Image (tube, rainbow, N blue to C red; front, top):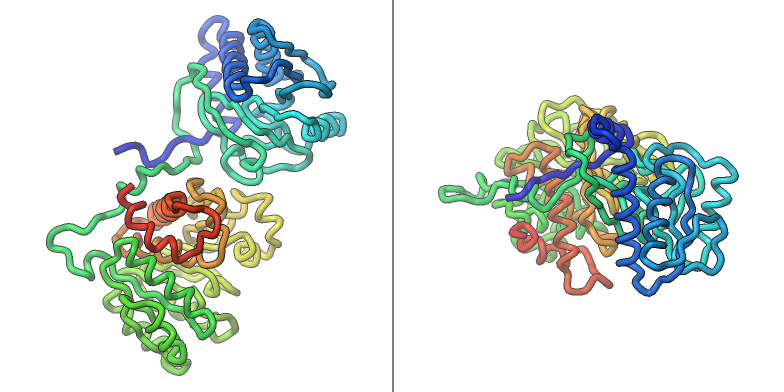
Length: 455
């Protein structure tokens, strides 16, 4: 069993790590030598045919790392100029700003970054692409678009969280001799799946995890069916699917194993409450539909069901904070989270950490913000990042599958933050295991989930 989480460093946490090292004589030049050597080594490994390197160096320690790299590249027999003139070089090394940068670059630096991005050569960034906030991933102005980033000691938050992650390219972590420490943010590993309870001798279908899925109006019945089947494939022992009566024939045709429970507008709460008596978790929203009646139904169910709940899709529409004793997980994408916060999706995309944390605090719930870097934020501010999902997950229905996995893990008794983080990992590993990434559809994941759980 490995560690379920690994550290992600902010700028302040990196400064603290370096401060602990400063007690040794000549520590800073030594660290700079190690960092520059790592950049030179990884650059030559990544671009073995390159013979000329333009090293664009700023005035701080990041620039110092770049100057060491330039010297070592020259010592290796290459042309490596410390220059802002970029024409004619095989590779550009970006060493303008490091982890201490935040905000927008000044106009002269922004113009230089624009020229780096326009150069006809691949870019290697030193520690962090210049213009990316290492502590948040936010970008307030121009930012380097690197093909390779050589970072030191451990990954930085801004290299894993979007939009910064999209500028980092391939990430290499170089050990420069600093001691490890606990960090505020952590990144999931596959080992988090070791925390998911497995069925054991003596379990019944109910004690192995019993999930109730509520949703699936006509036209979107398949969303609720995907959620129900995903819960079963995530090892829940029993799944009931509560759908509007008029959607029952479609649900019967689409999902074989779940028990089907039809409800009507006049008796929805009573019917669903009765169905929930044997459940250990509930999933609300996939294909449920929108409107005042649906919003009122979601609120009543959240208030009356004393069960762990995952709230997704249509159940997030016009959702307001609800006082609950049982755990709650919200699973929005950027547009849904923007509506919950009264902001637009572009703001959420630009401030993912801040948005997820704000929603977790406002709703008193764990918030799983979907994306290539899935964020799991708790009301106490604890946040983890899961970036196991490949781009192929950007297709309709995969969010419904994720909801089913979260529900299954909640039903098995995991705390909501761990259930959400482990579900994101299982979801991503399943997609990554698909024999073909192009054309992946949500239902493909159902067959891949069991193997992902076994890793």
